Length: 137
Image (cartoon, rainbow, N blue to C red):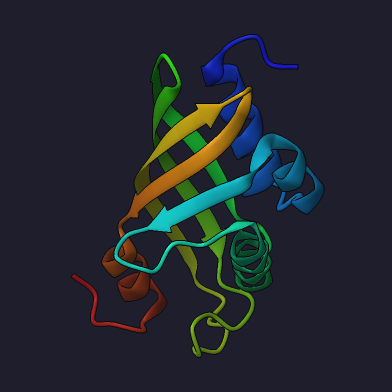
């Protein structure tokens, strides 16, 4: 078991975001977990499983690195950068084979030693531009 809130979030990122491990998603989150991504409707655990599956279907080599992590009490903030290759359908766009780099900031609220909520702000426009879905900025 992780000893600190930051270690818990680091484990969550490694197992869920870098490996797409849905069993770890269940083990490391509360039953009422909620994921918030930009202006999209919140996702519960079922929605998060679908999102992770879709992400790894489109980007099987998805990998993020933690650039910085700060924690206080039950809150943890992470600035991250990621790399992946577009190898499957993504939001209706066929695979391009393009390698992309993405960055973002995620904010976690922990409860009883598990992730209860996750908020994510990602450079979605930059990513869509790299994929050729939107004009590059």
